[in-house]
Amino acid sequence: MFFKHALPFFISTLLLAGCQSSFGPQSINNTHAPYNQAIADTANQQMLLNLVRLKYRDEMFFLKVGSVTSTFTMKSNIGADFVKNLGLGSYSTLAKDLISPALGMSYSDIPTISYLPLQGEDFFKSVLSPISLDTLLVLIQSGWNIDRVFNLCVERVNDLYNSPSSAFSSTTNPEHDKFSTVSKLLRSLQLSHSIEVGLSQDNLHLMILFRPTPENQSSIDELQNLLGIKGGATNNLFRISSDFLGVSPNQITINTRGISSIMHYLAQTVVSPHEHIKAGLVEPNVNLGKETEKLFQVNVSEYPPDNAFITVPYRGYWFYIAANDLRSKSVFMLLSQLFNLQSGQIKYTGPTLTLPVR
Image 1 (cartoon, rainbow, N blue to C red):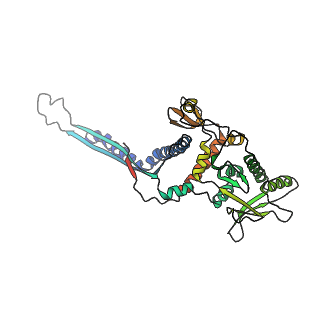
Image 2: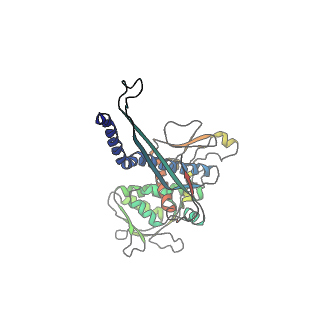
Image 3: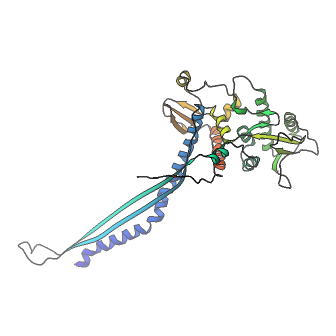
């Protein structure tokens, strides 16, 4: 009789032991993807929010997730209540020996998140300092379109300017048009495998090599004329430098933007509501030109948009990047990679904000 009543007790014990043995691995399956998605979403929202802030000439601010520590606790209680019939009392003939199993289990997940405010001299140096030419090389060699990298990261190449200091206007900018033509020509040569970008043999200088063919010779000639350089049948290797004071005939000189300059540049594409323009909260939307509008676009809506890749609320409106705007999404991804690369070089030693999440 005892073993008959005790059987459920032992079965329950084995089941709880099995659950507890798989608790650790199962907790990773349950939490890794949600944490990953939450951190990625909030990082994207923070970047878009700072672009909108810059449009309104508000100060940008970054708060980075330094660490996520989660404590998992599982407690199980297993017991039994045993009642023995002693044959006493008027109801003793009806009583039986009883074994009543008592089972209990509790589970808790306590995450602790540490935030690092990105600020201070080192951070602002990394944000304001121009992107290195080596970084441009890495981006191009990693598969990014050379025209997208140039339009976003380069402010000047030789004597051609790409909207320096985000100086957009409603009038046509001949220099910007020529710069856009250079970007298009570089992209066409990249697609036809007619250019190579890499380091010199002594690993000291960045070089670009043009490979002329009967099909692309006219494009190479046009590109070299726009840049004011001279190639030839045996001389199509040019040095890339950032030194505008020591310009040589066979040199392509590039002035790159910093992260702050790139963000100011892209902030001009944020569409502002007419109410804010009339109230003087933001400057009127300007004609950015066809090429810039194709590069990046942030829309605004009075209500939360349905078809949005990223959405942030600000000053009573919703600013967003459309989910089907693949060009803007690509530029936004490139901006995020550049920001992570630049800010990742900082060794933060200041205090952190640690919050237990309940």
